[in-house]
Image 1 (cartoon, rainbow, N blue to C red):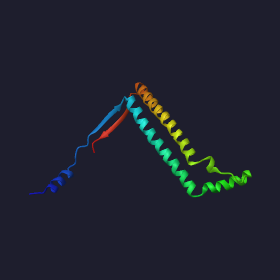
Image 2: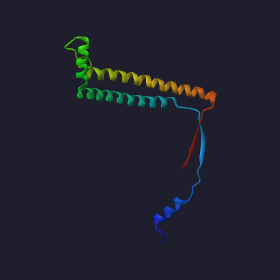
Image 3: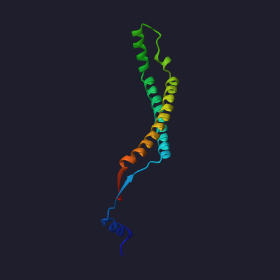
Length: 135
């Protein structure tokens, strides 16, 4: 009598028939495309704000802002010049947040436009041929 492991091993050694299916993508749902574009744009906006905060903190802790202050102070002949007073963390994050919001709006609109353009172009081209297998 054979064990279950031996039975499974014999089943896995058999060559299964590979089936292939070719389908045409002839329609993209508009609202699904808009929702997906919105979610992608929101996630990229979050990444933008977090990356901006991390880059600013790294530049602050490594002392690059202090070096930049002294260099620009010598160039402009001002002893009290400060980059961090103009570009504080709050100011930079506010600007980054505004850019992220604009990217969400524009990214969502571009996703909607892309879905509409694809649906209109399918009438001319016939769609996108996609192949699937069951490996």
